[in-house]
Length: 379
Image (cartoon, rainbow, N blue to C red; front, side, top):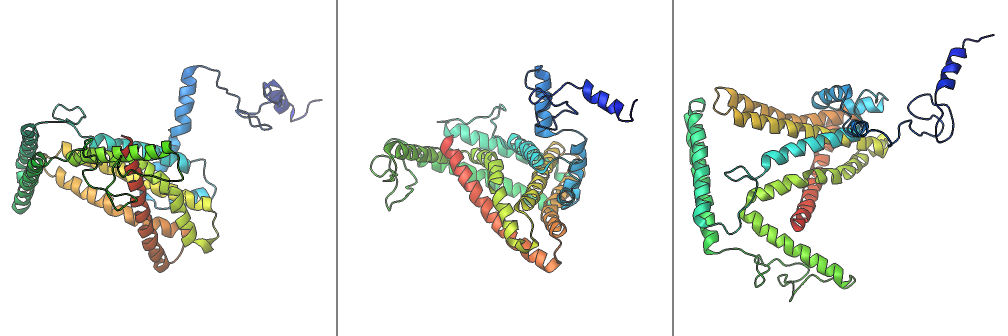
């Protein structure tokens, strides 16, 4: 005699058992031991597809996530706390995806380029060539300004033209001064800036090196080598500020990731009496930083569009307003998100927002400087 449950029983029996514990499989994972049905031994395209799906989660959840992330402060965090998690990209994946995309875009537009379009820096270049490049860049900017003259008020046009010429002249004078008094790191002068470290005398790799008495000689030698490389790259970035800017944007993702847990700890301290777990504050921090990365990406795109359409009528003004609106939206968004997630009154929210923001900026500067020094010492 059959029972209503017989079809379900037959389906279970028809499923292949888990290869690890022998339990019949009811889905993609074994409900007893957790082992997935799919293993690593399969075709390469399937593995690649699973990798991109697990890292970027590029499906309909991405669309449902990015809209509220940009326009609804605190919405994603409150949804996550309410248990509605499956419909959105998880906070950590969202942050990793946005930070990679945003800073990749920033790095692409901030790469220093020569006239031929290839990235690089010329060592030992002649003064005439450096001056010629400054002249060419000045002419390019003045021509661009001349084309856009009809779209600018006369006072703004005159001011921008004067600023362009003054900046170019300052760069030419700096190159001439560098030619008269070159700053070079040489074996005879390894510390041209007379930087002191752990001593009253300038650092020198032979006469006054970095030395920790508790460290072995190999470790001390490593510290001195890194400091020497830091000085060499400092001279290079002095000659080519674009290299410094590229390095700065290059370490920004690591800096943000480094201060994320500290920022969550700040939220925990300021909202201690809310009795929230540390992981809840970390989720708020991940969503806030994902919003920052998304806004940075939008600002990069707007700037690119502005550069491509700078000779069009009305478009440069519109792009300027969009950049202004996006920049103003950042602090407003973070304040509204803090108010929505933690639910305190406006006076206390504004008070905590001010101090959290102050501590955060200090942490961000410290994190960027640490990562930047390390990047310059490791080039």
